[in-house]
Length: 398
Ligand SMILES: Cc1cc2nc3c(=O)[nH]c(=O)nc-3n(C[C@H](O)[C@H](O)[C@H](O)COP(=O)(O)OP(=O)(O)OC[C@H]3O[C@@H](n4cnc5c(N)ncnc54)[C@H](O)[C@@H]3O)c2cc1C
Image 1: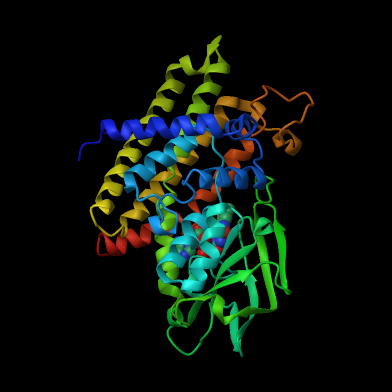
Image 2: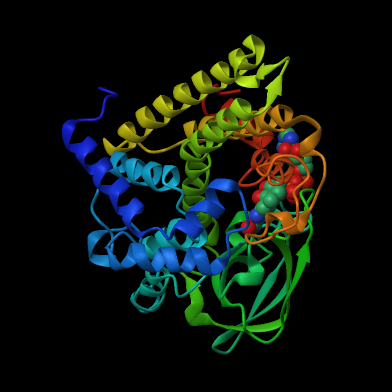
């Protein structure tokens, strides 16, 4: 394939860049670019702006508010947004549960949930993992027992990202224990305001509170909120996981982090000159950039193949592994570029508007937390070890 963008695609990229430059509030852009805390409101407002322009969920079918763009154009769009400093939207809604509802949801579910995802009105979270059911997800035990027109749900989900902000959670629940484990799982859409739902924060190594434990105690969920057939949830869950792993190569974000690394290395000093001029450090940055370019070309090749009708398949695992390694390596080099100034942890310094004197340069505070936070990338959405198992089995036939 030709990896250069066509003149039409270049024009499209410029149009999106212009849209971001014209519409993204400068304060939000600064928070994103400087690694400060971005609020739910920032993301929801941005989603509303995207939606108003018809960009709310570009990859969805046109009749449900999508754009009909090719996958390459979706990638260019994403890349231009991230490079321009746009905040993350609610991926759990737009990119994960949205496609599942589109493929397997009832007409009523499509009519109710999809417009609310597009507009940013509903914020979703993902209830797959449980204590003792992470890598071995099929052993999940959160139970849904049918009682008239409801399921009564009891159990615990864990590591649930942004549950504290969510209006809705999509959950895998056990609806049968007699059959093969994968055949007794159903896919439920649960209102987080339902009586019996409790959210408890889990503080991560970077000091953040993005993940949670979610408990269900006798939570009544209408049967109408089940996606597809009872006990067929595993099939729907797998579709979602392949979308999740595809996103995770996250080349656009790594490009933004690399640009940040270069700017920090240009400001830091080593042996009387800018660190970026130190031959060994410059070689390290160059090696990271080459890795990232290779990953981007691999991603583009992969996207072109799926556009041509190929199934994503186990190669997604390769992108997930490499993407997480590159992103972690960039945050590690950034931490080292900053040296001892990366050590102090001042949570308030991550909040826009904090006006105390920073310890070290004013760009220092987010570097340590970002390094620690990035450790998660090789764990979530199927750990890298599990991805290697998948590749060994399905690509190498081991
Ligand atoms: C920051 C963060 C956010 C998350 N957000 C969500 C979310 O929003 N919703 C959600 O449902 N889940 C979420 N997760 C959960 C995530 O998907 C799980 O952590 C992941 O699947 C691993 O499961 P586990 O934590 O139970 O680890 P375990 O499965 O207990 O694994 C522990 C270690 O053993 C290794 N291991 C396990 N089995 C094998 C094997 N067969 N072969 C080789 N090595 C193996 C693993 O690679 C890992 O290193 C999140 C996790 C993190 C860290």
